[in-house]
Image (tube, rainbow, N blue to C red; front, side, top):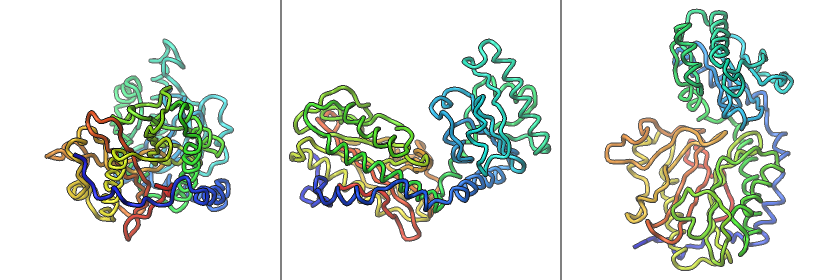
Length: 422
């Protein structure tokens, strides 16, 4: 049986209170944030964070293909979705020496004025789409170009960190030039975990965009609309306010809220359905807003829905009161809120994760007995930004509730960054 102490709790301002919604719309002016952001200072901070990690690991250089990692290190962007699955854009960052962006052909003009980029060259692409049966020859050309850069700028170091690459690229560097290759994800994720003040302003703009989208979803929610039609309103708000994409399609209703992690569909929303959304939104300036809310068609929860909802609130409230700088991930996991037994097998993949340009390190999972299912060895630090997750749904139950909020870790504890009404 689901038990909780929050069933009769009054939950914040009413989401359909005109005064609440009006006040949020008046203050929402995302473009005004640009006057508060020193973009060059932010860009230099992020690039220096990468180079600090290179020096700590004694890597001569890193090569980044992931468009999100390239965005973090240089603040350049170009066809992000396309270059997530084709190796047609990358950046070379040595510990000392010029940062060289290898961009898609004819795109040099996009990044020529950025303070983080010293040179722009046309990429050497060896994926099959780009080079066909010449992929092996092109991969050797690419490796030769990297060897030339390493000899020019870090001649005494044979250690390169790369985030995303295929087997042919690895073989060309290792077999022909004897480089030691390492996974750059570790250094980039650690670099990204500590936010600068300018990054926090970018994140605030993204969160307010997401909250405007949540407001529109709530207004458009009615019997007869499909999940996908409802979800499209959120996507529209993001794009028209300078956002970029949605990482997932997590909006479901009724019986499709249990189990969680089902993508939105053409299911028609029915009377009194729960509607759960996880924003997973890459918004203005490339920063992510990762907030979850659960609504109900008709704005009136029944008794079972209230129990699920209030348990999810208890879950979030308990865990957010634990976190402070210096607390180890293991200690947090040991003290964190315990899911009801009949909900455990439906649990979300993690309790807390970092958040920045997308979901980031750390990812703190529900521990098993020996903690071998995740990384529990580090600790929370000041100026990390995190999302605290809760999903409550009984195994075999009719519906489930998803809640999540975004926070900044300060020296005194957590500062909540997301404020859309509960």
